[in-house]
Length: 151
Image 1 (tube, rainbow, N blue to C red):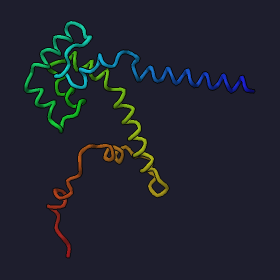
Image 2 (cartoon, helix red, strand yellow; image 1 turned 30 degrees about the vertical axis):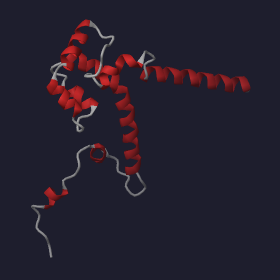
Image 3 (cartoon, one colour; image 1 turned 90 degrees about the horizontal axis):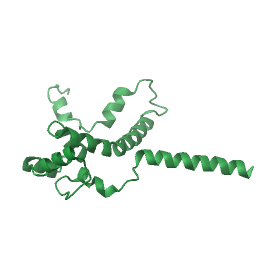
Image 4 (tube, one colour; image 1 turned 90 degrees about the vertical axis):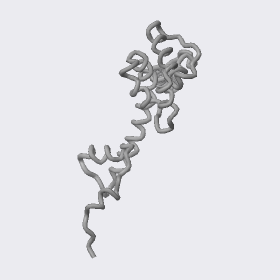
């Protein structure tokens, strides 16, 4: 019995290591500092064309102002520069995407469990879930303004 339980635990831990390796690269993390701040990066281990794009990007003052804007997060910044620097943007998104997908899955599941209560159990929750996960805030004043007040 003990050997069987040990085997199951060993198999579980092995699959857990494989899962972590899939999402978290075992490479040197400092090599990917350029994804978090391409304007402060001194050197990176990119290929020739990607290195050229990084040099061009880091010398672009307009994009640095957009990057320094508190309203722009890292993922939004890389989407903004995707047309001008496609290779660099694709590499950055590939590095950053495992973190956002795991986070979005967790947030989505929490929102779904909050909506699927005993009192609110609908079959189709896509629209409600989209509203819950949206970053846009409701403009209640604008929606209520054209309506007539009842006294």
